[in-house]
Image (tube, rainbow, N blue to C red; front, side, top):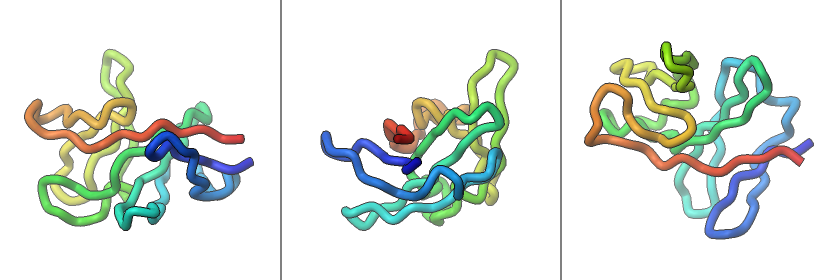
Length: 108
């Protein structure tokens, strides 16, 4: 199976599904030069957000820790300053004024 992201109404292959370890991310270089952080949770659900931490400018979100809130929102915590980003929407859970792009992702 191949993991794909929806970019500008076209699917872009980023990696084999077997390369994703539950709870860990991988960074993928996108055609426009940006990066995506791609994750699989322990249930096999796939997520992808931009890899750039908006607070520091570093491309590190793929190295962040996955978790979930009490109400079931899945997030990645930046490894630098620990801000949490909702994996479904990209919204920062610690600062409503900040978000990262979230991508539609599939495996086929």
